[in-house]
Figure 1 (spheres, helix red, strand yellow):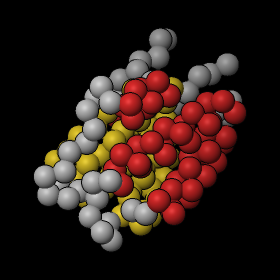
Figure 2 (cartoon, helix red, strand yellow):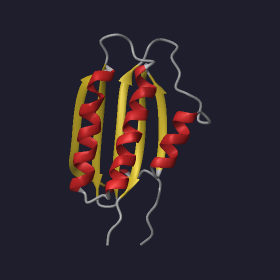
Figure 3 (cartoon, one colour):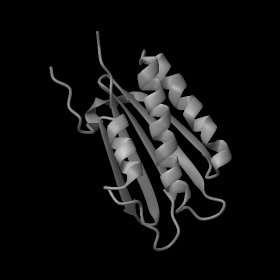
Length: 136
């Protein structure tokens, strides 16, 4: 069965981890470490683990510049049979915008993951990254 790059909510099972940290660069190491730990548990290669760590760091950096003071980042890891989905959400300042899809940060995210998307609604931004789990 071919793997799809599209986010498929039906592939998400009950294995969900959610971390909430202050929206401060000093706490990003917590999210990078959690990402690496989960990816290692899923038997990702060292190269793919590092790719995910970098992707999470880049997504958080994009959000940190548009969050108000005292905000929090919510990172949700959804572990499915065929994919790992990482969603990072944060409240944003009024009038804030995410970088253009043609910007360097988006180039990084799309080259390190199977799919990267973002949405900005009701003063909250969410960046979702999909990484395929390969069997065999």
